[in-house]
Amino acid sequence: MVKRDPRRHPLKIGGLRKRYMLTTMLVMVLAVVVVVAAYSLSVMSSVYLNMQEGLHTKARTAAEFFANYITRTYAEYYDSAYMYIDNFDDVNRLELQFINTSGRIELSSHSMTAGSFPGTQDITDALTTGKISAWNGRSESTGEHLMSVSAPMKYSNGQIIGVMRYVTSLKVADRLIWTNVLVASAMGLALLLIVAIISMVFLRSVVEPMREITAAARQISGGSYGIQIGNHYRDEMGDMVKAINEMSLKISQSEKAQTEFISSVSHELRTPLTAITGWAETIIYDEDLDEDTKRGIGIIIQEARRLTKMVEELLEFTRMQDGRFTLNAQPCDIAAELEDTIFAYRELLRQDDMSVEYDPCDEELPLINGDPARLRQVFYNIFDNAAKYARDGKRITVSTRTDGENVFLCFRDYGPGIPEDELERVKLKFYKGSSKERGSGIGLAVCDEIIRYHGGDLTLSNAEGGGTMVTIRIPIEPTFE
Image 1: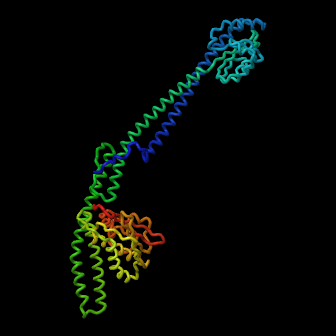
Image 2: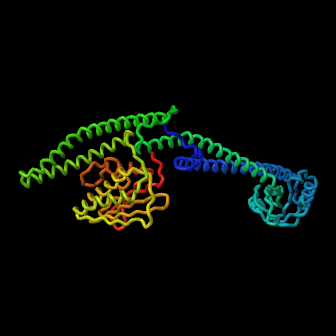
Image 3: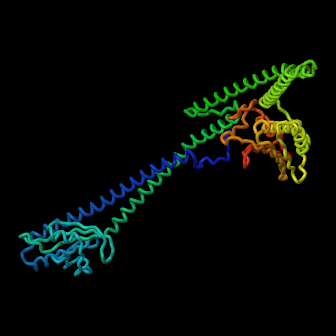
């Protein structure tokens, strides 16, 4: 059963979460910005328009009232304007101005502005077009945000004698607008927060199962066939988990059948191979045989031994697969075991015109708790591979070192090396890559398992300058699996 890692932060944003949040939240942010901006413009337009319409109505009504009483004399117009300002009731909210044709304020409900020239566009438009005009902007003298409406004042014959102008401060209106904008922005941010929380909760319900399924898939691809994922989902995720569980179970059954078949065939092959090798070794010493026959029997012995070695590797591998593999752990002088292997293999390599160079560690390697026979099996296999795949390099160098906690054994050949795209898979069982050499393809897989059982690791890399480097790391005090 695959267990969820409790150390993972459930709200960590990355991968699918990151992409989903970036796309969804980007759309939401843009939508909220557009809505808030549209709402703000709508509020601003509505507030300003209502104020402008109110001033427009007031100015039109007052201008029509004056038109009924203004005669042809400016003095009467001035007296009427003075009386109108004197009785003006909205003095706390509005400023009423009477402006002459030159743009100068003659009378004002706020006497401080009398005699000044506002110079705004509404005054100019009212004097030139004879129509009521509005203006919205900042005062040049005070910098205050103002709105004004100017209505032309006319004699009964239509001649313009001045302008009646209503002016109001937009300070309160602006405050109202900004209040609405801030409220709308706060609601937008709250909406974004709610959407983000809901999205994270939803993503957690998707991403966490995906992590669990991914971890299980990695374990299956790593050889842990048969593992099952807890299926407590009732949607498409549950269907996927069910399919993966079925796949894992079927792979496990297939792997078991394959292992049983390999074990059975290997056992069946070992007996006739032993007989072939034994009789061939007996016959080859018959003095009555000619040289060609002896050479043929020698080939039979060589090939029978090669097949026997392959069978032994297969049997060893099946023991590892079904859990029957064991180590006879004891205090082991790994340097001595390596040196004995080099001594025994050096003559065989010399027959292939290859040499072995040994560079021991300057300090004495400590004893490790290991299985000498299994370790020699690993060393022999590495030398076999070097002799098989790197014979053109003519030599193999071996070195040892320690860092106080681990012992390192390094084997380097000077052959063509391993293609980069095959390095990660070369230790997989039955994998032979692009090599044309004969073999079962499980020698390195067995070696890797043996070293792993010692608590260490076996790594392969391409050495600088050409060739393959095999590095074995074994803890001085390993924990056997």
